[in-house]
Length: 305
Length: 285
Image (cartoon, rainbow over all chains, first blue to last red; front, top):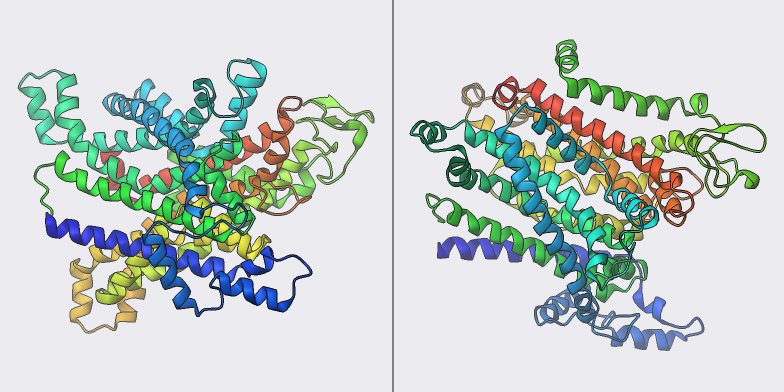
């Protein structure tokens, strides 16, 4: 277990270093940040002075090494647009994104897993068919379109919910539901497929034939065994979810991390871009690490070696 | 091929998907013939007309007009071009590159495999949309760069699928036999492995087509796609966003078009998987 954990964490760190390297090459290639900061009439001497104070005159690897060292200490430099630490620009927006992502995840699990279970139990019947329509729309419709249509129907026509802004619970409803449709469609589909696989197994037939009723068989015997592939796919799709967060934040003018990163990319505010990329990639890697570690809890036969 | 089409035609999912995809393909190819108006033609007297309304001149705009009086139906029809070209180009590029890399990694094993899969992990740790936005900010937004960016965000899944199939194939008797008979690595990969990896790759490519359409339209929606006035579904939605309270149709119809195209691709992927793998069909339908 310990050996496995060490190796798995080492892999995660390696992936993170790769992500930072790619992002670093990117921002360095995409233009000279010093040129963006200087006034039009700056002298070459002033430019050189600024480049030196930003560390831009050093060789690439030295710049990267320094960046990793400082990043490991939580220091991503100062935002070029706002006179704030770059990490702070990202992190002040984190609670808003967390609200959205956690809200959508909870709604999706509460909605998607039972829908998938029932669809698998009634395979081929009307209910299964209706569920697959829900899944297909969720997987096919672009999030920004669902969001705009939700605003049009629920805010502008019916006047039930506010169309954007953050603060009240009512303002959370539309963005969370929009994001949750996509994620719950995915969870429903995975749960259904995984349950179908499990329901064919001998131990389910045994449990049924010894007289257990359907619900305990589903919950105790089937669901636990069906959970591993569902979790795995959820972990891998977490990146898509984060992409969905960016779009949802744009549609609903939600002041989150995704918006902050997109704004920073637009403005070439590279310390903030790097901080954002590292925070997002860390979240992705951490979620997948947790998913891997949860296998052992779900299935005691799995030994980490 | 004929057999495959026959099997698809027996599956309702297959039929619906082929109809949807065919409709979009016809719209893209024959846009000048079927579009009711010039998609770029502005006419201020007939701006923001509701669907089915007729313009002052008497022409009927079936899906209404936008802020500049341009016909929404014509723009939706022409918009199919950008979406299809970007998605097909990107899926082809990513599929060929990813599958080649996956076959090489699976066959070579050892350090080549390890390094490739670590790079794949890095790629998968990047949220697709953010990566694409960053690339576009870097290389600019013309048609070729859009295709490249969408391809770049999709290649990693092909590597995984191709590699997994190769690993499974390596221990199959007919491959072991060709290895024992002394065939060269290139010959084994091309003649024996590649054809057998093809069907999971085709299924994946079909499913990725939908994701490519979604990514392209997302970029267009965020203002990073093909520049106006060329009609694209994502940018039409962005235009419609500001007028949601007065003219819902400007945003509603292009979004519906995206949904139907992606739905077609997703359904075809499902139907192909069933048709190409009879074992799967028996267990899951």
